[in-house]
Image (cartoon, rainbow, N blue to C red; front, side, top):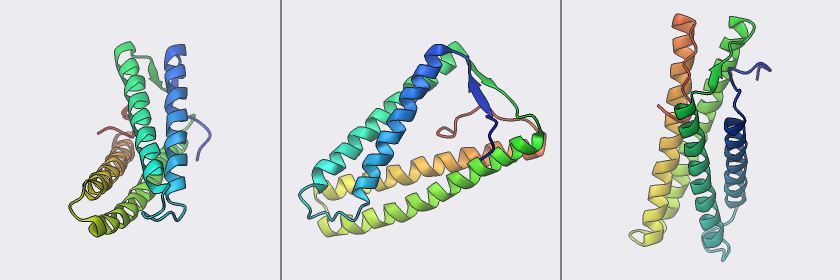
Length: 168
């Protein structure tokens, strides 16, 4: 990725909230990675690991909500265009491509989860797995849609939309 940021945070509280958001995101990815490490549903650790991942997701959602609520109320997030439009375009393109890869990964993972859910059919675990798969796909799709929109608006107009990648 390009080294110059598309946005920067000038407010100390927003920086603190952004750090919490980053920590929560890291925790969620770590818990997700543990589940993907080849653990089967019959493994006695599967239930607790699934719960840990769900808890990490809730923490992530809360941190994200607190950060964006603060930014919207305080209006402290500034757009800082890169030193050249080429750098900005490259950054937005990379964001879009990364979001696309994440969406494709989410589709694959959700299909695997849905396949596992077939084994438990109408049980609570099966329903939770189906809901998780749907949420995973939707979150990744939303991020990709925003990244694609930001990139296409920049290409058409030369302006950077100040919308987060995890919102439409």
